[in-house]
Image (tube, rainbow, N blue to C red; front, side, top):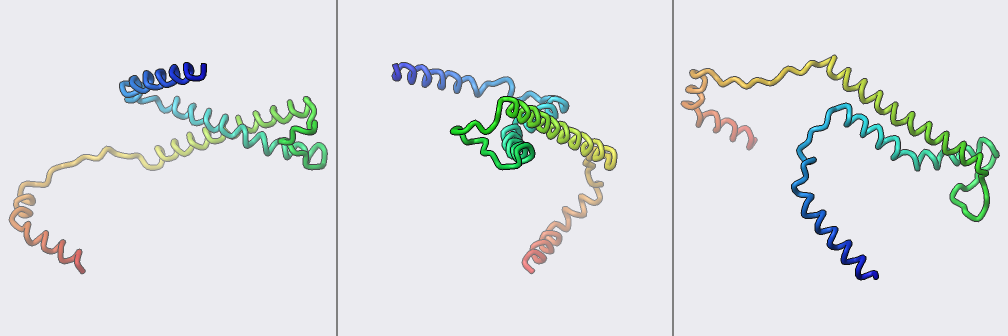
Length: 151
């Protein structure tokens, strides 16, 4: 049974691996709002375990006046109501963190656009007389550069 599962897993791995190179998602440029939404989602859900741990510790000290270990399975340190409160507080704090990051990102992007308008860079060729002068004096220019680099 284990051998069959291993063979199926191995075959599926190679099938998915072979199709991953011609993925149509590689060259897709997502709009800015979807990238901002994705960042907010990642920050909100990614901070949940850490915020829940700190909320549990803070809740036990605030309500019970003592440290109750949330990772200890041998005792019933929190009731089901306490657990609901901790999860609700943690979820609220995580959403607040994600929205705060979104707001700061949007404000920073808006102020960057407003304060320094970026003009497109245009490359113009040198006038013909300057190009001729550079070509005539090429040895002089390069000799000066090499000598200054040595000293």
